[in-house]
Length: 366
Image (cartoon, rainbow, N blue to C red; front, side, top):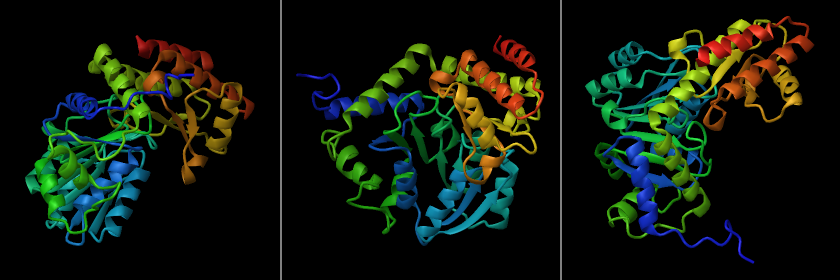
């Protein structure tokens, strides 16, 4: 008995290459785009291990947990690392990056998370890119959460390694990801004796065996379901229009922040400035004396499908996350999440104004 998901014809190299080309168009890039067969941590780690080594001096910007992870990988590669950390309720600035270069002019690699879904902030990549270009450093960017929710333009911004994933604002699968690679980045990798080779992490394997071979022979059997799902997700974005998809995410974020302020009960936006808040997901600060994890558990008890989560680790006590991305970038998802949080707050003895939150969401969505 045949099954549409189990009896798929093999994915050809030509089809694989055509999906890469569509992802490149989504990024408006002329750089090589490599689709990797795994969640975005695969190219995120692979790109660092390929381009960084004992001779690298890196500026690692930390605006959330992923920045900490990148610093760990860079140190593990033998790089000298200078961390630039800012509070999670804000964003880094180009002036802070420029000051780091002034203090350590030997920096030749900059790692940055574009938007941190985990903390709800987003960073001014275009302005930071100008500073990095002035210094001639290699620019590595995690745009996994940003793609589909806000502009991601590696060529225009001078990004040498730009990693994206489909599982958030693109509304696609988690098991496939991509990285755009500049010529400078390929040269840095080729000169790095520690870059992974004959490895699932290896970008150079893809360069030498796939790209340089005219994209005619795949390295291994591709993950068919994930590749087809990625293709379908890009098709949907193309049909809706990328600008419309991004506008929907911006509106969802604005509505969530406005609704949370109107809800009251001690809840408030975690990221202070609207301009520094990521459109992919909104973080909220739980009221004093009420654990965010308990509040979210109460809210989800009524509807487990709501896009709500508590912060991870130490942030579980204070941070609530509304994951209004992909199919949840809707007025209905935002309103239902705030209503559920209002009910949970009332159970905990707070006095939220649910109707005010509803009105704020409606006004923001219009």
